[in-house]
Image 1 (cartoon, helix red, strand yellow):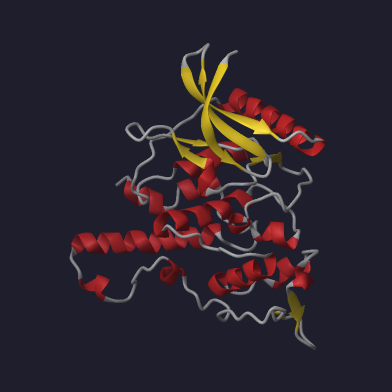
Image 2: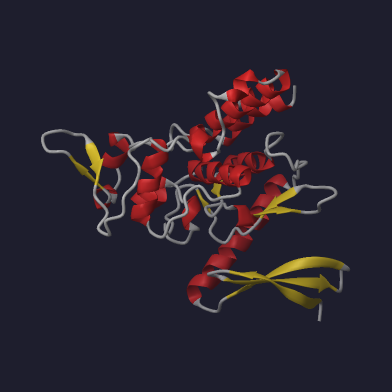
Amino acid sequence: MRYCVRKLLGSGSFGKVVEAHDLQDKEQVAIKFIKTNNQHEKQSLKEIELLKFINKEKGSRFIDFSNRLVEHNQICNALHHLSDLQIIHGDLKLDNVLLTHPEAPTIKLTDFGSAFRSGEKVDPYVRARPYRSPEFILHSRIGVPTDMWSLGCILVEMFTADTLFTVRDSTAQINKFVEVLGMPPSSILDSSTRSTKFFEKTPGSDRYVLKKPRNGETYKAAGMRKMQDVLDIDLEGSMYEKGEDDDNFLYEYVDFIDLILLMLKYDPSERITPCEALNHKFFNSQEE
């Protein structure tokens, strides 16, 4: 016997993860157990194949991870490496971003069970709902930009300690998107196979409006829930009257909001790429 199981770390739709001691290499490890059915077995074999490919092409690249959100973003760097390989994580969420050690903090992206290569057909439902991009919900073309949408949701969650789009179904999620980001471009809805489930065109025009939820639930008008309100940042009030150091923080907040909104573009072709994000003024200002 090589492994001695210590305790259960967590469970999900595919199986369970346990903490174990590797008796051969004398180290603590995490072992993932997959449910025994054909679908999960095929997915687990695909996960192993992708992980081997990633390790072979890029190796283990870890970057210092600061406890202060506004200093560096190693998750974005990891996505940059994955995008070079045309691999989409597909289920990026805060639970899948791990600190290796609190005293020498580096990160690992984990759980590639939903990962896929660019151009592959994927199941849009096997993802954590709060981090799903519009492409998953509207059944549009899914590719590398979908991970950047998830990252935008993660950064908001790291800043506020609350998930940005906590909802119970796709209708509520679309309405939450519209509250914060306004209406999607008509070109996106025209090319989506599922847009008519949530939107309809006004008579005699090409303009879309949201359908009223069947459960009668109400939402704020399009774009009325501003990102600075979500983050609870005062961009126009007393912060302008503070000292020079506080003004610097204000500029960082403005840059942070700009970066988040670029990550949360409806159109994947307009969404900021990992490489562009790493060169964004928000990250650059932390290194000056």
